[in-house]
Amino acid sequence: MNILLADFHKYVGYSGGIENVLAKMAAAMQARGHAVTAVFADEKEGKPFFALPGGVRVYNLYHVSGMAPVRPSALDRALREIVRPFSRSAARDRNYRMLAKAAPALREILSREKPDVIVSFREPTGRLLLEGVSTKSPVISMLHNDPEEIFTGAPEKEKKALLRSAYIQALLPSFVEKAKRYLSYDRFVAIPNAVDAPEVNADPGKARKVHTITTVGRLTGRTKRQHLLIEAFALLAAEYPDWQVELWGAMYDKPYVASLKAQIRKAGLSERVRLCGTTKDMKSVWEKTDIFAFPSHHEGFPLALSEAMSCGIPAVGYKDCPAVNELIEDGRSGFLCEEGAEPFAAALKKLMSDSTLRRDQGLRARLAMRAYRPDVVWDQWDALLRKAVGQDTEEAEQVKE
Image (cartoon, rainbow, N blue to C red; front, side, top):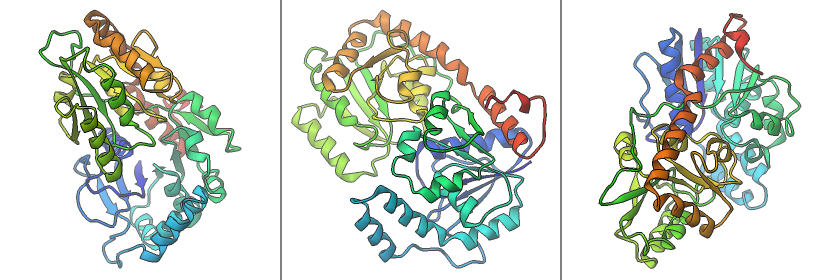
């Protein structure tokens, strides 16, 4: 097949989870003999953070050869920010209007590539494909987050456009049920993210001079909430002087990063809590991690959490966080706690004080993540793609709707 992977979003040096999934899908589908094209939309020109395999054709929707660059105007941006405090839906509509200016470039790319099937990685991307240019190629729309987070405040036109999808993929069966509350649609498919972690056999029960609690994710207060981890660790730091915290992730949100640094200084933890930025050497990070802490408010299918667990590291998260509360089995592969810094600290303490418990829960975490092995997940995707283009195979019949 000729597969087009579409994520009309910035990508130059961007280390987001969706970009990670796209790069992995491109490699997996190419390895299965398919031709793969990737299309992004970035005002910058440059390389992605997650490298795409050789042979994958790459387009930047805002910089298509032979066409004038697409540049959202300052007025467009200003209008979006004016309406944002009053209406999330209106702000998203404004974003779409800026993206829709690239419709001629998209038509040109589709004309050149003639894809058999398209995978849309974001809802505005699907809207431009299905409404803006009305592509005739079947589109599989991915939902990369909790549907409640995606569709609360979503523009009605965006939801209506998604109904034209050949299939809509959600990351968990529970998310399919949530999505049905917002979309009257009968071709949902649940396929998780592939957990493709480095070959690491972490030993969280190992005796060390310094033990490490790690969290990985873009530093942002609304979603990842790293401030709660710092607050929780501050409650334990004096009792556990041989422990430290490392926060890995992109620092795009400058005000939030500044607030974290101030919080760390105020708690007197500048030598024990580090903001580490991004890295492509996750193997080294996982090898020294004893506990993975994940204080997120909401998630889709967190790659950082699942990769840590697949390496044999126990995890701590919140009971109310979607996806996290399905990946972590409370009391077996880590702990789930109630909201707040004190409950999070109590859960961390159980693991910090017991090396045998860390090792045992880490082992169970590793075993649990085998259900999301890359070969299993990409076989499901290959079958779904074939089904979307009418290539009915034995594998396609195994796709669970």
